[in-house]
Image (tube, rainbow, N blue to C red; front, top):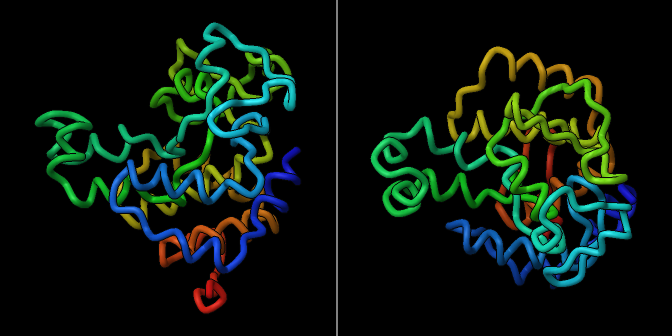
Length: 230
């Protein structure tokens, strides 16, 4: 399932790339996201396939935990949550996310960064909320065969092993590019995940593909060739 996500979905034609421009806000980012993943739509946390906005839950053995309606639809998930992006900014203190979207250009660009955006099952997106990622001892049984764990009491989530390295490198990228502060605990966790789950061919290909839209890559994943975008 992951191999389909990482290999087939990353094969984009130059024509398809050229039709997408770097988003300036979250609304534009979601529009670009639908196009980016259109060639092989597979969501991030569980590896389910989807068609349009509808998830094929059987494709990854997903069982809704509580909200079957939201589980059946795709939503766009920030690996680094919007709360993490915004709460360190003054605009968030004055009016939360809505105020930052209205008044802070830096926030809008960070919120729209496609390196940080992935398609996800709506129920998992909602359950994860703005929880930080962590190593959790629980077995992944909340969503059927989906290897995702959410600890609601601890306000933590643990993604499947196949994407933990990408999660770590995305946090490092967002921290460097937008000046986001990482806690000591998070830095230690993501350093460990970055080492334990090294960059794979699929992640390099995704980095190149997103770079062709954003105009830059994630240096923690590797170098990109912007000349190859055309």
